[in-house]
Structures are given as structure tokens and as C-alpha cells.
Image (cartoon, rainbow, N blue to C red):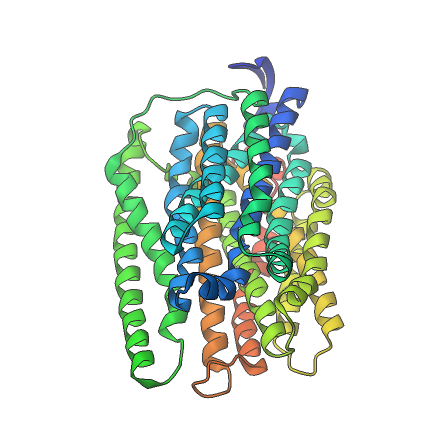
Length: 506
């Protein structure tokens, strides 16, 4: 059935609706809409690039700012916490405010945080700057996803989501490599100095050229839901970040006290987070009856969306855990520098990004299984291969294996992004994007925390804290076991247009 839909600033746009497919969207992508998406892609790339730059810089910051390693970790932890708190709220924000307003807010906050980080006189100001940066970053990806779903025709969404995969794969990989290069040649401030002009240009160009897409609502924000969301998702992510500290090893009274504090912090954080999250879910179920939910959970009524989200959670767990453990293994076991370790994993990320648009075209033409099934098999198989890594494993072999693993992940991410959101009614796109971003953030934090903890605990060297090949093998064994359900899930997820006649996916 064909209808028309008028959107502010775009005129009347043809919309194609299919009850069976649960897909709606404009018949063609206009030039103005394409320009908006490209601007959002560029801005999201810059924001995510920044997210992964701090890890490599921590040893330099400890010396330059005169802080401890525990304090320095807060530069990453504070960023993750802010992301976990803000992303669940973006579903409501994208319904309430215009595209231009959300873009200006996101890039304005990100640019302000980057400037503040560049000129930060000390550690405390740098922490504040990272929080401000994260506020903008948290908005950008859900904004990009929701915009794509609203303006890109259903038959072309795979290709556009393939371009999104370039952002989510290249940016995290280039971040540590770029950071390592700048730290070896300049100083940590240049990490922000390089990003700032790009962010400012994106802000100015976007404020001028981005027009409003879709309609806004006037629903009041539910303050208790915001509080419960912050405590729930923030508590869980913070608790996960403390797992490594609870198993940090070391000797002496100070180390024992630090471990005890980390264990208490872990238990308290996860407990508060779990209770608050349960209350948050209960409140959303009540509020969504009158369309007032902060995060509408009716998105989970779609079995295809729920399966895709579960698959994405496992993929994110394995992906973020692997790209964190592998550089540590290369540095600790093979004695490579941070920049060299980054260059080893870079080809895989480049392959993953470059394959995205091609995979998107395959999805548009052939659907999900032709991509998800080989993607899941390759991903799981390579993680099992990683359980055999030791000090004698050639570095060239690791580079090739990481490239193959990245291609397996690419075969999964693009169809999962597209199939999950396309399974929803258009009015739920923003909430689906928020759920997708939240799951990625929490699952990624869990993957990093668990695999690093296992790696540290299983490493030899007593209390020295040295990481070993045996620790790497143990960490990847966990990831490999967790990856096995991916193969089953790959057969169950469908492209919405492939749904049997008469079955609605929404």
C-alpha cells in the first residue's frame, strides 16, 4: 500500500509501506537527505575516533600530570559511563527535538569538550572535558541510525548501513594508531589538537546545511526514568569497569587494600545497577501504555529485532574484547610498541570498513543468511584459532588472522544494523537506535572487562602483573565459547522483506 508523508523542510515525500515487511521509507533518496547523512557520517567518525585515543596515552598522562594509573583510567571510565547514561535517553531526545538541533547539540558539546581537553591545565579539568566529549558522542550514532532509517529507501538501507560500518570499524582502529604516532612524535595534547579543527568544521557545515527530518513530539520527559536509567546503565558499566581492578594482582598491603576496595565497588555498583535497571524497565512498561516512555520497550515485541540485538550483543562482546586483548598480547608477549601493535590490527579494520558498502549491497539483494551464516562461522573459528596464540606465533600470521576475523565481523554488523531497525515501525526507529547503542556499549564494556580480567588472572609471573601467552589463550577461550551461539542465531534472523506472507515484523 502506498501513501504520502509530509516532513518539515522536505515537502511531500513518497512513502512505501508494507505490512508484511514492516518497512517504510521514501521511494528515493534526495540530494538534500544524502548530504545530511554524509555530514552525520563524518561527524560520527570524528566522535568515535576520539573515543579510543586515550588508552594508549595513559602512560604519558601519568608522567605529565603526576597522577596514578588508577586515576588515569578514569579518563576512559568517565567517557564510558557518560555514554552508558546518555545513550538510553537519546530515543526520547530524537523524538522531542529536531535533526538540526540534535546535531548542533552533539557536535557543539563534542567540540567544547575537545577544546577544553586541549587546554586542560590538570587532570580534573581533563576528566570534565572527557565527560563533555562523551555527551556529544552518545547522541551522534543514534541520530545517524535514526536519520538513515527515516530517509533512506528500504531497498537501499543495506548499502547505507555498510557505510556506517566503515565508521564503527575504522574509527576505533585508527584511534590508537593515530594516538601512538602523535605520542611518539609530539605530545598527548595533539590528540585533541588534531581532532578539534575537524570537529569545528563539521559543526559549522552541519549547522548550515543540515535540515530537519521528520516530526517532533511534545511529550514531557519523565525525570524518575532519567534517574533510574543513569543509575541502572551507569552502575552496570562502572561495575564492569571495576572487574579488572578487583583482580589486578600485585603484592603488599597497599595492593591488597586496593583489590578489596575494587571488589566492594564492583559488588555495590552491579547491585545498584541491577536494581535500578529492573525498576527502569518496570516504569517504561507502565509509561509506554500512554506513549510517555523514555525508552519504549515495545521494540522487543519484534522477534526479529530481539534476535538481532542478542546477536549484536555477542558480536560486540567478542569484537571489543578482542581488539583490546590482542594489542596487549602483542606488546606484552612479543614486545612490540603501542604504535606497532596498532599497525598490526589496522589492516583488519581497513578491510572491515572497505567491505562494508559491498556487504550492504549483498544484503539489499540477497538478505541476511548469505552474510550472517558465513560471518558467524568465520568469527567463531578465528576466535578458536586465537586460543592457540603463544610467544612463537609469527606476527604476520596474527595480522592475517585479524584481517580474516574483521571480515567475518563485517559480514555480521551491517545486516544486523539494518535488519534490526527495519523490523520496527517508523515511530520506534529512535528507540530502536537507542537500544542498539546501549547494547553495544554495555556488551563492549563486558567483553573488555571479562577478557582483560581472565587474561590477567591466567597470566604467569605471580604477582608481577605481567601478561603472558597463557593468559591470552584463556581470554580468547572465553570469547570463543561465547561466540558459538552466533552460528545458531545467524539462521534465525531475517531481512524484514523476507518475512513469510501475512506475518508482520513490528
